[in-house]
Length: 173
Image (cartoon, rainbow, N blue to C red; front, side, top):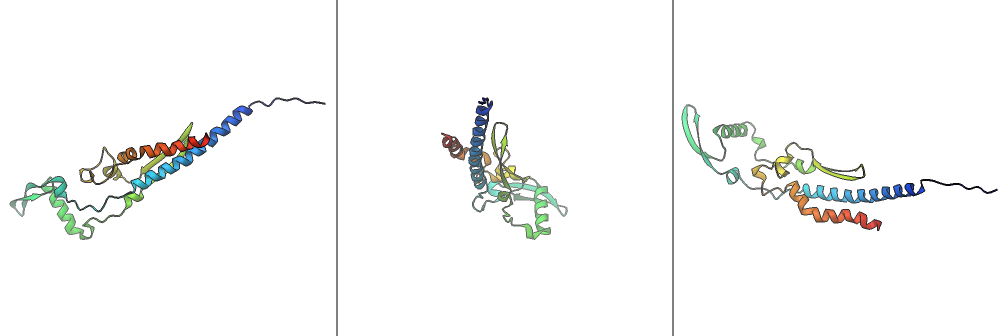
């Protein structure tokens, strides 16, 4: 007695398994990319010896102290800023000069996840002040020229990123 049967869907299943293998290869390469980006973003510039005056310039300020009008040169924009800073310095002497905590660098995160039809790599920073230091559009004047922005680093590394991701496709050939 002979039996004959047809097995439908083998080609589709084989194709699906191959796509899964390709996505896994791509996700491994994406992980390499996100870790390299994260490492570069964590890099701090050399110790900054810039002063407020060298960044913002010095201007004359006039204000009232003990009922007397005084004028002096300051790197602050307003007399109120100048007074606040020195009052804070007087009340909290242990907070100045600024000491690096390295919190910004430690707050860079990375993640690779599967999305519809592909793989996504995400690199981000959880500090609320991160954009003021490392975002091209929001970077504070004081940090310009000292800190590389995330966008500059991404531009700088783009050839390396495409090459690394391309290795996933070269492996399947």
